[in-house]
Image 1 (cartoon, rainbow, N blue to C red):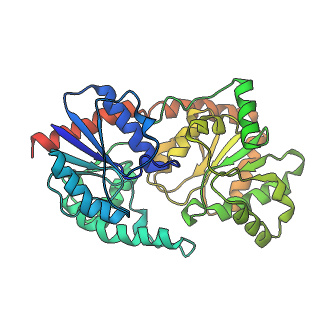
Image 2 (cartoon, rainbow, N blue to C red; image 1 turned 90 degrees about the horizontal axis):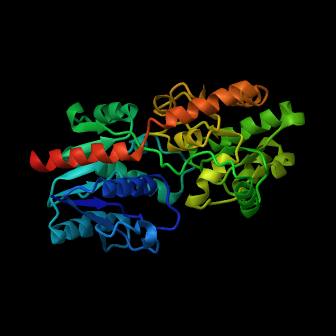
Image 3 (tube, rainbow, N blue to C red; image 1 turned 135 degrees about the vertical axis):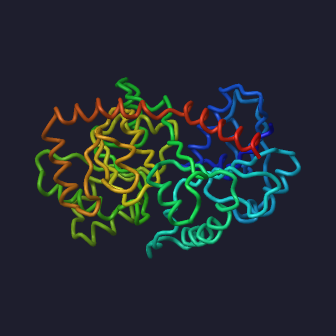
Length: 378
């Protein structure tokens, strides 16, 4: 069997959730050493050394200036040219017309929820495109993979798709995510990004569903109630302008120097970002999976996260779950953890054990089973 795997933006410099999970899957598929050939279809980029050691896999650059023409026109042409047997599209959407059966990874259908007014024009266009294309292609796909039972239930109900067609394969956690106790390495990381020695970490952007406004509001409540023992807030995904504007709205400009906005953190440095943090705060309003929760847990960081969407399914009992709409409750838990070292230790140990349940080798094995069923039963 010849398998095609599409990851449009795999080689871009700043990789995020979809590209990161696809990269992990491809690496683990390589380790399986199966008899099947694999071709990875991707857009032109500069980080081709990502796959040093995977020389047996073929990588094909697909033409197209936008994600729409690449996916709908040039990807099917490339798939036919390579004579693949099945095509795995990893980024929610797929070609409407495909020469071969499609395995579709539909991470979530959050794009079908109300679109926040704060989203950029590009974000809104992407949402409208997915709203149009996903209901069409999902019915045509041979198999759909999603990343949580919560999201499967939503997909089946919202898209009116047979339950048997949708398979849950939880994302995995890379083994590089673990607690680093090397003081020299940690100090070098802190200096590299000009961060404080101890901090609360929030990984999220200015998207409404990531809940940044309430995070900043909760932090100001925490600070003003706990001035004698406060930690700084580090938020790589928010810009300085966004934070300053939010503080002006809250009339809390005096907290500006307590909130750090280092910008994009290199992928290789992410385990250090977690390892240096005291608490990981992730009160997202909606997640198909919630990978940062597991990454923080694997690094031994106590986690405060939401009691909504897929997150309780992923976090289990190893995190403090809160109502993400209640800023006072978020502030309460921040203070509770900081004042209770034993609770912090319990969450740290429990989180490491919880993260161990999610490994990419298991994801690759289950995905290969789906490939083989799709091909040999087609």
